[in-house]
Length: 108
Ligand SMILES: [Zn+2]
Image (cartoon, rainbow, N blue to C red; front, top):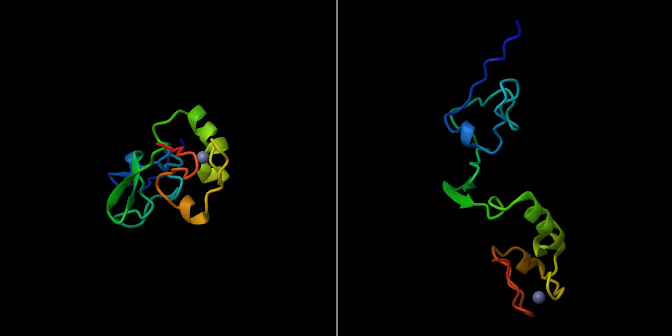
């Protein structure tokens, strides 16, 4: 009988977005299990940990169709305003929230 390998997992693993819930391949990052007592890649479904703070990922609660539209239209991916085609500067593209200075389009 083939038994799944015993892999180490942390209490938070099932909440992580890299968790595969598969006895043969339980984590995308560490398929054989984590070596230490914490995981630097741990990222809960609702957000990611940066400097001990949970950063919410705004795309998480959208449907796949909405995400695909965003991939086509959102300035983060196109570099331009979907409304007036204003070209965002590299500095503006680093902003958390997009606001077009020309037509006041916003991604909120
Ligand atoms: Zn615009």
